[in-house]
Length: 486
Ligand code: ADP
Image (cartoon, rainbow, N blue to C red):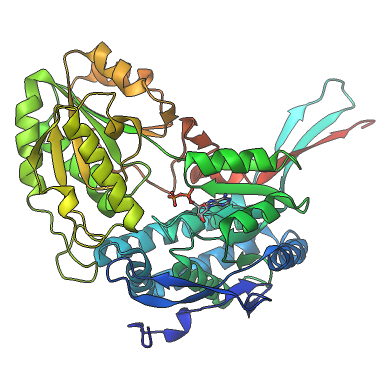
C-alpha cells in the first residue's frame, strides 16, 4: 500500500525496533502483512531468525542494566509520557489497527484508549513497589522484603487486541524495572511497531522496549532457550501456551499465560432480560466475536428462554456488517480464512446434531472474511460450538431447568477464563459467583476488562494475572534480607 491514511506517517514502521534502532532481518527476509477485509497487502515486516532474536535479547539485557537503576518516579514519568503519546496519536493508532486487524474503527479507538489506560495504571503503580518489614524471630533480627525486577522479559501477543495485549504486559514489566522483547502476532505487527515508535518518543531508553517480528516458532524457541530471558508472558491459544510453558522449563523461566476460554453466559429466570441482552451483545459481538472472554455458550433458563431468544435476535438485527472503516459498521471481517471456516464448521456441526437457526444467514454464504451474525437454539453441550471457542459471530443457546444444572454445565470444561450470569436475586448471585470455576465473573455485566482489576484464568485458561497490583507482581521477585546482630 503506497499511502496510508495517517496524520503522522512516521508511525508506520516496516522494520523491527531493537536497542533503540529500526532494523531489518540480517538475511533481508520479509513477511507480507495484509488487510483482512480487502486482502490488500499493507506492507512487509522483517522475518527475524534465531540470531536476530538473540541480538534483541542482548539489547534488552543492556537496556535492563540501565532501567533497573532508574528510580520508580523516573519509570513512572516515562510510562506516563508514553500514555499521553498514545492519546495524542489515538486516531492514527486506531487507523493502523483497523487496517491490519479489521475491527470497526470505533472499536479500534476504544482499544487504543483501553490499551493506553494500562500505561497510566502502571505509571501510577510503578511508585508503589512497596516491600515489607516483618518481626524477626529473635530480638536482634530484622526481616526486610524488597521487590526486585525479574530481569529481561519476553512477550508473545495475539492479533485480536494488537495494542492492549502489549501495553498490559509492557506497562507492568517496565514499571517493575524489567526490559522487554515483544513478538506481536504476524497479522498485526504495525500497531506494535507504532507503540515502539511512541516509546522512543517518550524517552524510554534504548533496549528497554523492543519489538521483533518473524516466524513465531523460531522466535519462541530462541526466547525460551535463552538463560538471559527470565520471564515469558504469553497471550494466545492453550495449545501454544502449553508448548511454551514446556519450553520455559529448560531455564525455569517465570511464565504468565493468558489462554483460551469457553465462557458461559447464564441467564436465570430472575434476570433483567434487557440488561442480559445488552450484556450478551457486548460480550458476544465485541471484536466480531474474536475475544478470549467472548460469551461462547449461552445457558438460558426455561422460564425466560423464548423471550431472551426473541430479544437477542432483535438486538442482533441492528448489527451492521461491513468494512471496519465504513460509517456505522459494528461487525467486520474476521482475521483470516481459517477463522471463517471455524465458524462454518461449528455451525454445520450444530445443525447436523439438531440445532435450529433462528436468526442470520448461512455462514457458508460468507463473502471473503465477512461472516454475518447467526443465532442458533437447541444447542447441546456435546456440540463443537460448546466444546471449543468459536471466535466468531455465531451464538448458540442451551436451555436449562435449574440452578444446579446451570452451574454443572458452566463448569463442565477444561477452561476457566471468564463467565457471566444475570440474576436479580442477591442470594443466587453469591451462590453462583462462588460456584463458578472461573478467574473472572461478570455479574449483570457483559464487559469486565479494566486495568485496575486482575485479568486471568484458572484451569487450562492460564497462569498469573494481568493489570491490577497482581500484574506488576508478575515481573517482580521478592528479596528477603535478614539482618542480624542489631
Ligand atoms: P491464534 O490461534 O489466536 O492465532 P496463537 O496461539 O496461534 O493464537 O497465536 C498467539 C501468538 O502466539 C502469536 O503471536 C503467534 O505468532 C504466536 N505463536 C504461534 N505459535 C507459536 C509457537 N509455536 N511458539 C511461539 N509463539 C507462537
